[in-house]
Length: 319
Image (cartoon, rainbow, N blue to C red; front, side, top):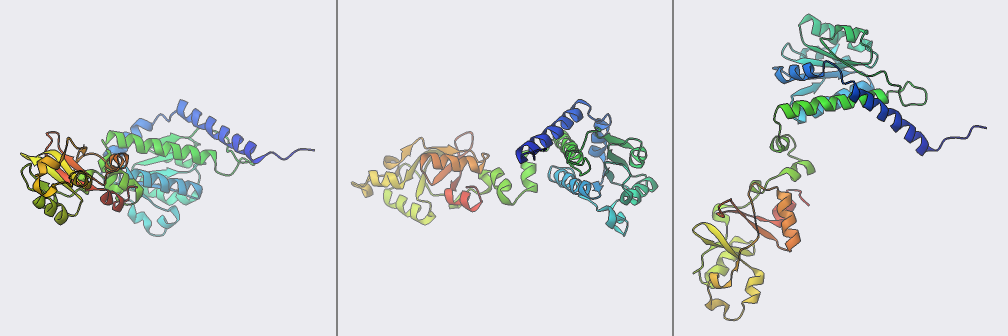
């Protein structure tokens, strides 16, 4: 009697099959890969990506990854393309079509459209001798690896290979375009990704909002400044440079004859600071580590540029 395999054993078999296929793809990267990247770097329009069924889901993901990393891209459904959406594909674009067999009939109208208007066509398929393979200007051939499903038919290994190849294209384009963290933030302003990439300068308070005093400022005036600005701190400044800070803790430690003293006599010298170009998440880390609620931002010369409060970080979604 044949025993039923454990789910974990099935999982290991699937992952082994797909891992080995990825290794084969790595060892035999499609010959046209460099040429495809060069083409996509110079295309004046967008990268149109399309496929049917599971290949369509992969195509949509590849388009989304490219678009978010500096390569304008759009997914077009092949069925909708045959009913008017071919107008989305222009002579300024390049087209990537995905079909494991290379004979997906729903892609026929897009293939014909690219041939009619001389639109560069990149095919991703396992069969170089297929319709898609022979009609493509550039072929990104997938290795002939078995699907990982029990019957060898459900798209599993093939979609994993295609997804990985799409990631390789997107990342290569990203590097060659010089796409940096700042660019990534511009395309991801919402959610945790955007929050993690925010700089201190994007949320810090500056100018007239800063609580600033000088060494000779009487503590009565210092308290008025701290109260008016509402951050619970004051910056001790000399010739625009931050030389100290006054906090609630400094006030408590100097209660005796406080009103007879000056800001310079009460302030803590050499305070912790942050660069305006530092990530907001870094500023939050400094505040948490030192149990403080505000941090002054200074430039390389020590000049006061701003103040970031822990509430600014929390409002921005950095937690």
